Length: 392
Image (cartoon, rainbow, N blue to C red; front, side, top):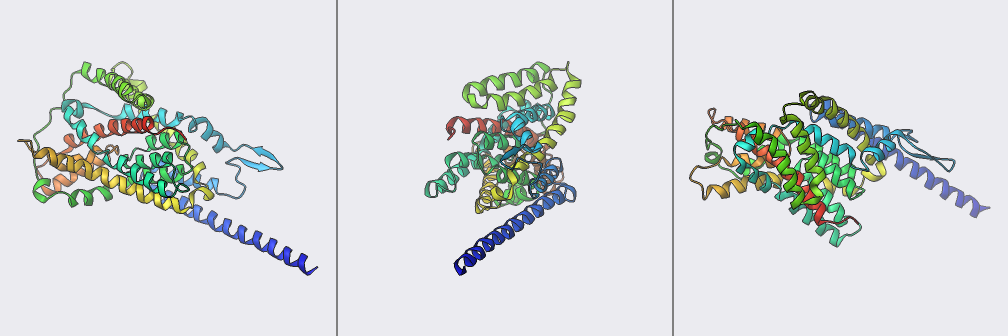
C-alpha cells in the first residue's frame, strides 16, 4: 500500500509540475504576443505584420486552442490557422503572392538611371552567407541544435526580407520558423535604430559629408518594361531556384510599368498586399507555439540574425569605401548600407543621416537606387542558397 501511495504521489506530482511548467510557458507566449502588439501600435514597428503575428501568438497558445489542430478522443480536429498554414505557407504560396504586391510598389527608376548601384545591393548580402557559415559551424559541433538547412534559413534574416525568410524557412521545413520570422521582421522594423550606429562605426564625418551629384531618374518606358523581363530570365538562368522568388517580384513590377494595367497594379499594391500580409501574420503564428518557440535556440537565432543584419549593413558600407580608393568622383559610403531589402526605410535613414551631417547633401535618390537593388539581390541570394543547400 505504501509503495502504491508513493507511486501515486510521484505520478500526480509530476503531472502538476508539468502542468505548472506548461502554464508558465503559455503565459510567456501571451506576453510575447502582447509585446508584438504593443510594438506595432505604440511604436509603429511593422504594424501590418507584427500586430496579426502577436495576436496569432496568443491564439495558438490558448489551452486546447481551436485555432490550431488538436487531438480529441483520438480524432484530429483541424484548426483554421493550421489549415491556412498548409494552404498558404506549406506550399510557399502566400510569400510568392506577396512578392507581386511588393514588386508593384517598387520604382526601379533610380537603379535603372545608375545600374552600378546594383553592386552595392550584392555586396550587402555578405552578412547572409557569413552568418550561414557561423550557424553551420554551430551545427557541426552541435548537430542537435542546427542542421545545415536550419543554418541556411537563419542566414537569410540578414537581408531584412520577410517574405524570402518565410519562403526559405518553409522550404527547408525548419522547426525554427517562428523565431526566424520574428527576428527578420523585428530587425526590419528596427532599421532606424540599428543602422545609424553601424554606419557611424565604419565611417568618418568627412566620409559622411561626401556630396553626390544630382541623379537623373528619367528612364525610357521600354527600359522600365524590359527590366523585369530581363532580370527574371537572367536570375532564372544563373540561379534556377530563384525563378519563382524573382519572377513573382518582377511580375508585380511589370504590372506597374506596363502602363495598361493601372487598376491591377493598384490592387496588387494595396488590397492584395494588405490581405496577404494579414493572413501571413496570423498564419505564421502556428510556428510560435510555446514548445517550439521557447527554447535556447530561439535566443541563438535572434543573436545570429542581428549579427547578419549588422554585417550586411557594414559590408555594403565597406564595399563603397573600397570603390572610393579607385574612383575620382567619390561615393558617399553611407549609401552602401541601403543594400538590404528593407525598402524604403533604409534609404530614408541614410538620407536623414546625410542631411544631419550636411543640410545640403541630398542622398535620397542614390540611396533609393541601392535599396531597390538590395531587394533584387536579397531575393537572388535566397535563390542561390536554395541551389547550394539541398533539402534534408
